[in-house]
Each structure stands twice: as C-alpha cells, then as structure tokens.
Amino acid sequence: MKRVRITITGRVQGVFYRKSALAKATALGLAGWVKNLDNGGVLAEVQGEPFGVEEFIRWCRRGPDRARVVRVDTEPVPPRSEQGFRVLY
Image (cartoon, rainbow, N blue to C red; front, top):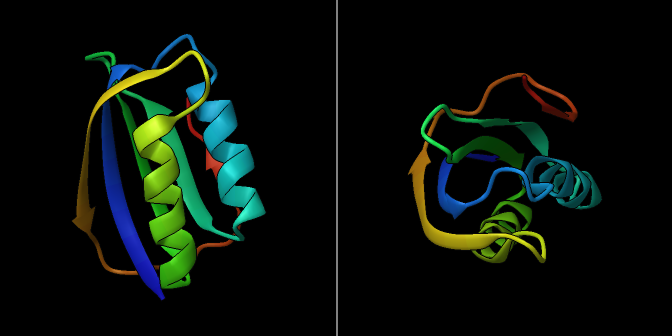
C-alpha cells in the first residue's frame, strides 16, 4: 500500500479538476481526497496499489481538458485506514 500527497499548481480551479480527479481515483480503486487550496492550487492525497497511485500522478500532470498544469509536487505520507475517494470543501 502506498500513499502520496500531491500538490498541483497552474490553472486547476474552475476547470472540473476535483470532479475529474474523483472519477480517475475511483476508476483506479484508490482511497483519499482532493481539495482546492486558497492559493489557486489543488491538494490531493491518494492511497492504493503502487501502480494505481503512479497512474493517478501521471493523470495529475495533465488533468482535465481545460486545466493547464504548471507543476506537480509529490510527497510520500504514511498509509492510513481509509476507504473511498472524496472531494473536500
């Protein structure tokens, strides 16, 4: 089990980034969450099998069609007992 905190910057708010991240994470069977940041970025934590987590990170570098991702930073964090993926507000 692998868990990663991901910070995404660029034009990533107002482009359905969180909703698209929810769909992608769910399709990959990942647990965790995604939320908007006050600075215009997006923060996510995802957990699951290493292949799924890496695939999600690759997706984050593109995002949905209208997004313009400038930077994606990742940081490993300890896995936790969590099921499902959700959008935090």
